[in-house]
Image 1 (tube, rainbow over the protein chains, first blue to last red):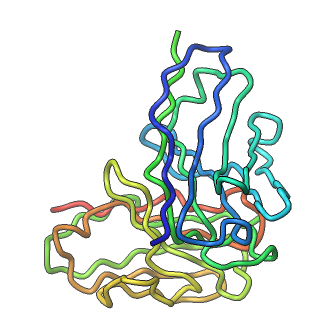
Image 2 (tube, rainbow over the protein chains, first blue to last red; image 1 turned 90 degrees about the horizontal axis):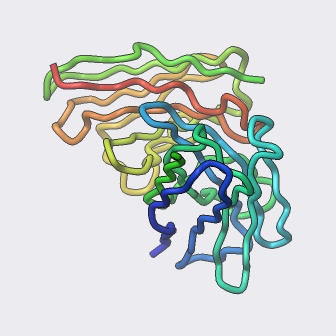
Length: 124
Length: 109
């Protein structure tokens, strides 16, 4: 069974750093794009970026370029999303999801398996 | 960039009724690269439809997708209590900006 298990909820202060994780299992991690999606309270879904774990090719949505860093560790089939300096406006739910089709050409594709989400709260 | 618009914003229906949700694109969606997701409160999105009309694994046939180019529709043939949720369309395979529509909430009337 394909599973994406995300790290637990975080409460941080503005200016702090944070790295959340998405541990995958049940499939070949290296050959499926893994993406991160933000959902602010009461709002819709936004692509943040994606990573191809096979070669760590990473692509960011323009709105998130320079604001976050996406990475992956193939040895433990885990993707990460990190911030160097959080803002109150980063308060949101963050989902990781895997592309439904294997292969590098299927970037920003439809996602068939999603993690349960990690809630990040940034407040002074 | 393709921008998706969903209508209506909220759909109030009773169990047993048919739901018709619209997703309109600002320009033609290549190869019908259009997906639909369902999201219930406190849950992650769930893939329902891809390629505009193909049901994802395990999705019951009460859900159907149709359309092409700029106009797409998700139909739920007979609403059951578990179908009341928010539904998002997504165009995929290109720019991530505005890839998801704003959503349609299907609520119990």
